[in-house]
Image (cartoon, rainbow, N blue to C red; front, top):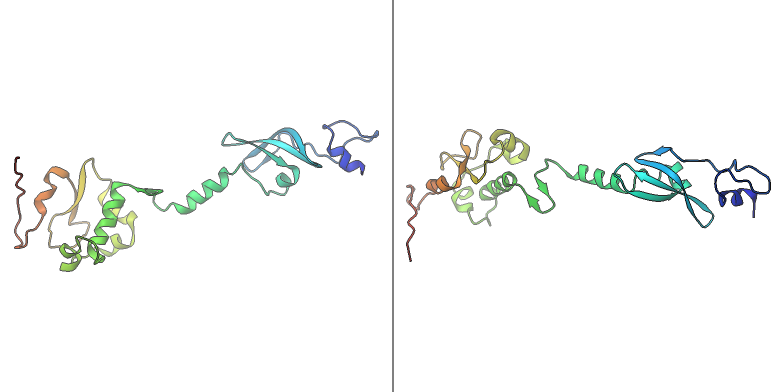
Length: 195
């Protein structure tokens, strides 16, 4: 076995056969991306490993080559953050959960452009459309209407007009049923029967 390989198996500063360990560079305290080297760790076979602390708080044990070649720059949190940032457009959908504003925007488009939507006949079937800016961009929709108040739904002031910034408002739920059209085009009232 060569002296260089044996040097890597000894703690920093020790000598092997009278030679100083100059072939092993002490990485303690050095930063590699989000990782800071704390100390030398147990070796993996003939390879020197280092215990590193990530900026997120997790520890990771890495081989010297992985650190110096910039193969690893974090414990894995950098990859997660990069993926999350690349996948996030507006921040109103997290996994399979969408905010009230995003659901209202998606349902509004579905009513106007999806013939299989249960409410298509009341909107798209009658020629009602969504303004171009809203149809193309959720951010435009949110900028124009703002966040929805608690217990509110998206409502058109004029039910025969398109979905536009001047015709849409967030309305509290108790009054929201007053805009529903009957088959004759007049406003209807809901009658609740007691049992």
